[in-house]
Length: 182
Ligand SMILES: Cc1cc2nc3c(=O)[nH]c(=O)nc-3n(C[C@H](O)[C@H](O)[C@H](O)COP(=O)(O)O)c2cc1C
Image (cartoon, rainbow, N blue to C red; front, side):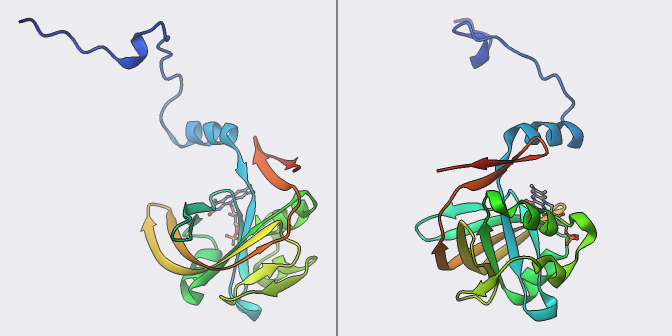
C-alpha cells in the first residue's frame, strides 16, 4: 500500500496557502500585535510613597471558577518589583475619560511612582492595592503565583474584591485609544 504524502490542511477545500510574509521576529510581532489591539487597564500596586503602576493590555482572566486573573508585566518596569513585594495588585479597567491617566501610567510625561496617581480619585478594597474610584471595573487581587519568563513576569492573581462602575471601556489598537461604548 502506498503512503500518501501528507496534505496540509490549508491546501484543501480551496483555502489558499498565504505564505508567511514577515520574519518571525520582535518587530513583526509588534506589528501584528498592533492589529490585535486590546482592552486597557491600569495595574496598581503598593502603598504610600511605594505606590506605582502600569497601563497594560495584557490583563485578562485565567479562569472565573476559581476567580483568577493574569497579567504579564515587564520585569524591568517599576511595577513588577512592587507587585512582588506587596503581594497584591488591582486591575483597574479604564474608560474613555481615562486617557490621560492611562498615559501617566504608561510612563508618558515622565511621571514616576506615586506621581502617576495625580489627577484621579483612589480608594482601596481588600488587598490594599490602590483602586481607581471611577474605574469601569476594578478587580482586586492577591498574588497567587508569578512565573518569571523571558522579559516578563506572568502574575496570577486570586480575586479578593470586585467593584463594577460601568460605562464604556478603552481599547488600544495601532498605537491609538478608541472608546467602546455600551
Ligand atoms: C496601551 C499600552 C499597553 C501596555 N501593556 C503592557 C503590558 O501588558 N505589560 C507591560 O509590562 N507593559 C505594558 N505597557 C507598557 C507600560 O505601561 C510601561 O512600560 C510602564 O508603565 C513604564 O513604567 P516604568 O517607568 O514603571 O517602567 C503598555 C503600554 C501601553 C501604552
